Image (cartoon, rainbow, N blue to C red; front, side):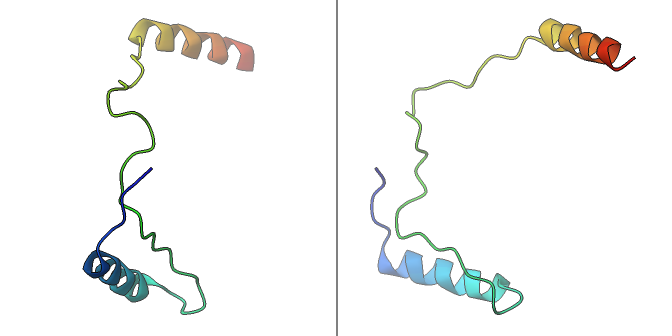
Length: 65
């Protein structure tokens, strides 16, 4: 899915990961592929309906009682 990162990008990320690794026994995570999202670029995030959230929140509060 993603394109390959250049060697300099991978080396830079590897250096940063090594600097941030503590303790030294922890594995580092560097991926050679670009940081492209896995979802389609034209997909929009879901719309959140404030009234529905408040209604569900009230319902959950009432169940706790």
